[in-house]
Length: 362
Image 1 (cartoon, rainbow, N blue to C red):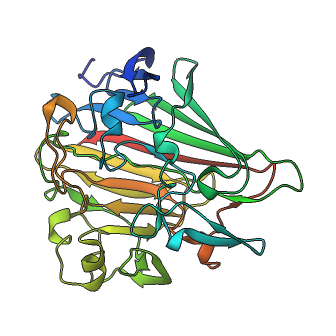
Image 2: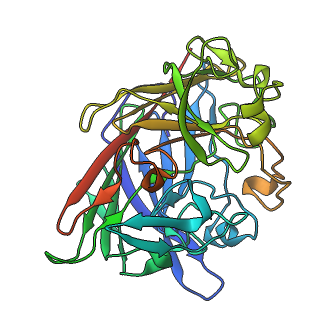
């Protein structure tokens, strides 16, 4: 990889990504634009690697994860790099009502439904094809009744890379015929970043800036209450850059519920018109990540529930708060809060959204 910063045409190559314990082969797709090198697995549509230069041009992998596909089956690994679906984040008690019918989803997190259930999209092997030398398209079909969700769903995620910017474009179509069931949908990517390097330790010194002035308040289960909170005068006021460690142990109820940051900031985005959702800087290396999205919220998670995890990339043993996530999506538990933006997808209807991660140095 050329780390001089001179952009070039993105190269795309397919490699062996290992195999799952049952022998199912997994592909590894590598994108290189001369500034960044990115690797994506067909297992879980996982973003496995982002190699980015620091202010001195020295490259490092800034994504937590595993060396091959088998590692992503490690019990207790917290969704490293995966595309999450059919519904990202939490649904209270795994229940929601749609068209006067109640649906019970798989409950996999303290009685709640989390990140698509026991076998969410993060556990599937996706189909892959190259995108005209710019990236890779991953595709998945989710049948009616999958994890309790109504309706069949066809999903694609395009990973494309150009000039130091990695773009994820999600498309999902309710594949049911007219008169078939509606469904709900909330897709995101759950990559843990550490801009100092994936095995560099706690991310508390990273400076986080989220322009939003409001968060969705959550109860002790981390389920939205339905109310919104003004960030002014609270640890959630990240409108100016602030070290993550300055807020993640604050003595306030919302932080105590989550053990740190695990909240959704409200964005003024519109479909097809991405806005700046977050900017995070590592002062030591100078690496910067900027996130833009047309989703209604960005969820900052500071790795509060990460357990010691051995066998990671390069033999690393990850610990608590060794990475942060910036999950762009609709609000958690939206089907149970009519005042939130809708996540309903009607038969034949297609949902599209885009999130871009731009890597620079300061």
